[in-house]
Image 1: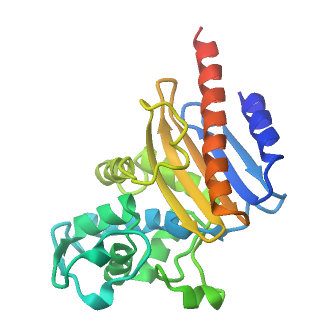
Image 2: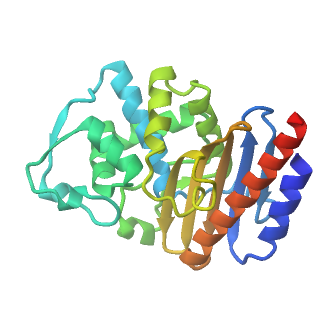
Length: 271
């Protein structure tokens, strides 16, 4: 399996002109295949964009599980909390009542930046980073809030890696991140991700994908678990340095190549 998938993806990657860090993990055999733009890319962190929100959701449910906060706790939306970019909360009237549960859902499905920043304030940036370290994601860190472009200009950004995102999704899949209840809940929320322009775009309509996208100028990321009749797998694709539309198309193309190769190989083994 490894040779066919690796060769097909490598051939396609040779036609692209951007930095990439890609990882595939078969959740049945646990076989891992990786493609990196250069030999150092496996350990080099990429700007996470909104994929960092996976870690924020984990810390939110971690605190809920411990009774530090509660899903039904209500936040009064204040005008000073609102930021632009992705999401719908910035359009809500001031003094709207929003539950913690809804903040998490909007952060993960709409990539809502206002919801994310409110959660960072509630959870604590340091607590989120402690949890990132506890789940052994050593190349990931939350260093700024969403839409904080002044920090980006000063070289302060949020980072992750293909290996870290693969690690955390496998932990969620195997219920070894928080516990079965909350790990399953996070993956179910991720099935409602509104942006389907990347990993899911060219897959058959009956295939379920639990994923989280991220994007900034010249950066397009997507990471998810693809649930198939032939077995499930993790796919992480981080790209940087090219036109966003080209990167989006590339991610969808690579996802289809991997799905097609995986389904052919697993079918042939069964027959």
